[in-house]
Structure formats: structure tokens, C-alpha cells
Image (cartoon, rainbow, N blue to C red; front, side, top):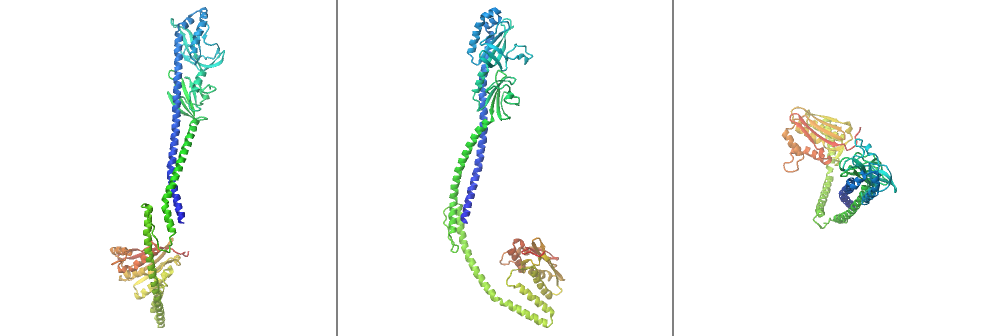
Length: 586
């Protein structure tokens, strides 16, 4: 049993220590995981914005380069001469102009073609042969602008050449005469969408992320998708309008995404970075696995350390348990050597002191038992006296009846029954009926001794008839009421005995109409009930009440003591409450 308790204590200490460490450790791991996940997302956003910034810088350079090239071309004297020439003269210059434009395109790999359209009937000049172009009429989108009177960036469109179909988006501007400022032609510099798309694909955006280039009307110019989407709704349906220069927003759709965007300097274009949330989750799963491994390893190490320290802690207790197990209860208790000054050492010292006290108490018990045996022997020898007294009283009773002295016979009979109940083989308990009968005998004797001095009233709940109680409790209370209350009164008095039942409790009340007790004396009487034995304690007249009070508390507990109320000139009321110790009749 002791080993089981020790093992149980060991398990409890180990469990509590592991819980006290495991909860903070898991909380720390969860906090670290959430923090790392947030940092991973923020890092991906910052990396994406940095990538967009680099691409934006490259695109801004290309756009600026094309715009500068357009300024160079419209101001070039050969271009001006060609556009101001007649058809015949323009034909003579066409080959040289084509070579000039081709040389410009050759040095710029991102330029698909440069085309100069004369306002006259002369042939257009281009670095490659264009069979058909799907260049939209931009003036339809801007009705307030005359056609070809201002620089434009077109949306993406197709051109059909000898090499096949190509997708481009172009910078368009009118060419005016440097002398008359009249429009003499138009310039189209087309940006190869395939080159831009390859630049976007090589950007290194996070994981499976994509980049989209939008114009001012949110039309897709190019993207890292393959094939190229046409509208933004094809990629991000239901995306709210993008406000501000740059921002990161969360997009909720069929798949959750993070959308990064920024405006390009010098244009109305926007770059969008689209990063699927699954990228974060895959990295978060790695962080979660790493955190779980770290927490698991830490928990394993902590568990081993806890088991080691608990083993060290419980070892002295286990040794003490073995010592107690091997101690013979029939032999004198031995002392256990103290090996430490900690709490276990204090426990051992307390055990050693306790063993010494147990030995002293054992010796006292032996002496008490010996004294009890001696007293029992004396009581056995004295039993002859009550039998002799009973026999003598019975003889007196019979002789009085022979002389027809019924009053004396009644008194002797009551005294005989009274003594027989009081000396009833040392039994401590009786029924309520027996206790009431006993006090009736006492009251009958006192009524003959003090005729016309008092009246006795008994009110007993029939349900209490077979209930058991401690014997000889009511008689001292009636005696106290008679001696200290009624006899000190000039006229006739009344003593009432009431026994009632309140739930599982029996309430006994003895009340008299005697002279009562003064308040100060009543306080002294109540204090004397619990006063220790000693010189002057308690007052002689309170011996009977004190005896009843002490017996009640000894057998029924501290709440069962006497409760005394008295009023000078009115009377005294004494009550006690005890539990029902046997089923009563209903």
C-alpha cells in the first residue's frame, strides 16, 4: 500500500511538472509558429514589392527610351525630308530610310518594329513587312482628342508579318514639320509583348506567383501567364478598384491570393503581383513541422529531466517507506537517521519525535488500562451494595403496604425504580420513554417531600417514543429548576418538560416559573459550563448542569451543549438538541 501511494505521488509530481512545462512550451511554440507565419507572409510581400519595383524600374527605362527615340525620330532631318518629299523623291529615299529604322530596331531587342506613316501618298517606312495590323482607333476611346494629334500608348494588339502573327503594344505620336508645325506623318514604335512577358516570367516572383502589366484602363498589356489573358477579370474576377501608388491586399476567390500592385513612374501603367496563399501555407507547414520537432525534442529532454529529478526527490521517501514497512508494530519504534536538512529531513525529524511521543502515549494507555481494570474490579465488588439496597427497599415497600400507608409506599416504590434506572448495569443510553419515566419517578418523590410546592407538566412528541438518547440528562435539569428556582419562590410554581422533533433532531426543553437568574450571574454560570477543572472552578451549584453539558458535548459534539435563558422574577429555560439515533415511529 505504501509503495502504491509512493508511486502515485511520483506519478502526480511527474504529471504536474510535465503539465506546468508543457503548457508554456506549447504556448511558446504556437506563438513562435504564428509569428513565423506572419513574418513569412510579410517577407513574401516585401520580396514581391521589391520584385515589382525592379521590374517597374526596367519598364520605366524602356518606356523612357522609346519616348526619347520617338523624339529623336520626329526631329531627325532625314525623317523630316522624307515626309516633306514628293512621292517620287520619297521612293528614292525609301531604301535608305528602311535601313536607318532597321539599325535603330536592331540595337533595341525589346522593340518589335518602328513604322513611319507619311500623311502624303508615300509608302510607310518600317523595319519589317507588316501585312496587316489590328491597331485600334484610339480616337474612339478619346473623342475629345483629334486623331493622331497627341502621343499614345495603345492596348495590346496583333500584327501580321512575314514571320507570322505577333502581339505588341505601341507608342504612337504625330510627326509635325519643324518648319510649318503641320502634321506630316505619324510614328508607331511597337514594344514586343513576348519580350516583356519573358521579362515578367524571369522576375523571380514568389513561388507560383504571377505578374500582370495593366494600362490606364486596366487592360492587360502583358503578363507572366501562358497563354496571355485578355481581361483582368479573367485573372482576378470581382477585384475591387486599386487605389494609391502601391499596396498589398487580400483577394478572396476560388483560391485565396495576395495582390501586390504599384504604379509605374512616367506612365499610367500598373504592375500587379499575384501570390497564391498556398505559397504561404506551404512555407507555414514547414515552419509548423520545424516548430513541432523543436517542441517534441524539448519535451523529450524535459521529460527525462523531470523523471530524473522526481526520482531524486522521491528516493528518500521511498527509503522511509521501506523503513516503515519493515518496522515491527509489536516492537518499540526505531528512529530513522536524518540525512538531509530539506523538507524530507524535517519530515524524518517529525517522525522521530512522533515515534517518541507514541511510545510515551502507549505507556500511558497501558497504565490507564491497568487503572480501568482495577476500577472495574472495585465496581464488581460494590455491586452487592445496589442489590442489597434494592432488596431492602422492596422489603420496606411490602411492610408499608401491609400497614396501608399508601403515600409512603408510593414514595419508596418511586425511589426503588429511580435507583434501579440510575444504576442500570452501567448502560449509557436509553429510550426517551425510559428517560421520561425516570424523571417522573424523581418528580413523584419530590412532590411528596414538598407538597403543594410545584406542578409538573410533560409534553412529549409520540414520534420520539422509541428514539434513543443519552440517559440521566433531564433529571439534573429538573433538580436545578426545583432547587434554584421553585424552592426560592414563595408561592407555587410549575416545571414544564417538553420533548419535540424537528426534522432529524430531538429538542428537549426544561422550563420553570421560579425566581430566575440575574444577568451577571447567568453569564458566570454559562462560562462555568466550559471552564477547566481547578481551584474555584466551577461553582458548586453548577456541578449538575456542567456534568450534563460536558456529557452532551462528549457524546454528540460541541453543538449539543446546554442553552440557558433566564429572566429575573420570571423563570429559567434550559434546552439541548441532539440527533435522532434510531428510527422513530411514524
